[in-house]
Image (spheres, one colour):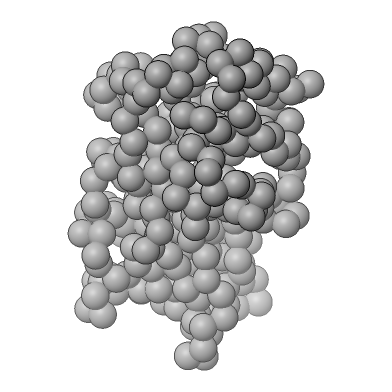
Length: 284
């Protein structure tokens, strides 16, 4: 490891205390690093934390300081950069951001010494079609969620898999999740936990009004389409698709097509905890 790039969420790392500490550790070991400071609210206004052209091609590792949400957004911003990432958890659960501030120096030294593995995590690519024309597309590391964004009422969604009709869901929405996202909204909605490196995706309904509606696990090579049915409360329509939480509004008749992205996120994992041990410690 010769060069690092640090993405720091200043709303989490106040006064850049953790950022500066990491920079000092790297400097002590004669390792270069660049720092990208971001404001946590930027994602809601411009939809990005950073840009790939800011990162030198000889960068060996990206350290993301903040929490799982900061790391997920950084992964989406830098999806076209083939550089492994590792997160420093200053948030709550910290399932994805592995480094804790209590043993910061020990873990940074593990990276410098090469005591880590790299996991490739699949991402999702979603396209929105209106009147047969593609109007928007985006990617997600965790999930793509089609859900109501207005009044508290169910919405009707027709789901197709590989162009075959699967089911009509009357629900608050539907989650299409990667293994990485299986411990996020999918888990809260009663969906299964998937092993992070698995090449599968899961469909999970949100508060379905249909008895017996359950999650469905599919090959990651499956193509999923979600059609927004004509709303019986058209005057109060409020439906949107969320790419890792980033909203794009929908209209009745719109279709969302979701498939595995040709891009992946490389997550650096330190050689100290198994997947099962992480579940035990983080999820109790």
